[in-house]
Length: 408
Image: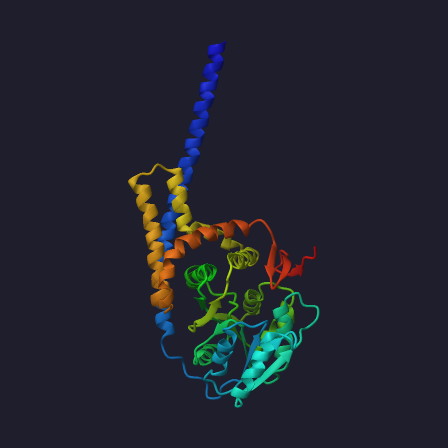
């Protein structure tokens, strides 16, 4: 009887070992496949980015004989060292019929003083400081935009831009000519590159924009027509904006930029990705700021584009570690893992330097594998809650994309 029990225990141990081996082999095979997919993605992303930039470097198409009137709407909140420079890049746009409307919540906002200080330097520009927010809006950016748009009764095109964005002088000419190229185009949206401020958190944030976000948008655009817009800069015709119900239709949505393009597409308008790439600043000083922003974006993406969850397979350095842990350290596993890390660094350098012209940030490409590991943690954190931190408020995202403030 004792021998029978021992034999049974031995069989159970062998079965458990066999089961563990099966799971580990399965995990090794899956992680190896993810490494291979990541390698392919890195190459495709860098090639598409280089092609896109070559097209963007060409001269903009000529404007129509009668250039449409444009209102640049720039909602602001607070100030930093780069705000004056960012605003000046817009005030120096090369375009004949343009007005500038800067929105703040109150005169005590530091950004208001920056706008007031710039007005005397540009007496030939039509500059308006719109003060106040529309009540009843969960989205404070939209709360400003509602009143800002109402101040421009003559504009045929609205150019929306975040406070941290700077542009080249021909930016508006490019965007307007792209809107004019096809009567069905109701909205033009722009990719953006990120400049780091120097801190590790800022450099990681810029790496995410430059080597993750930007290539993914480029690739998705080649696979299917664009049906959403990106927040840094959006140009929309008055007709398209009125068709979707104006900015009030976005007042409670967290991803207002995404839905602005989606609603325009739903109403039959084409959404075009501009050849013009704008520049934003990655200003995170502490890792917590970087983490909170990335988690907010991850949870927003999960709500607006659930397919974004699948991007976990592109976290090559993470899967390289899993492969090494799950499989024996053979020449194949070590070689594939090393290839993933090297390819990530090399293609990141290509995108940062050759495609985006950020030669001062080439050294940050060495941080790309570390950033990917951190972003794997962000991906996990993005799955388990619908609450985000934004502008000092804790907000809960609803399944329909709306949000409300969480009061504890």
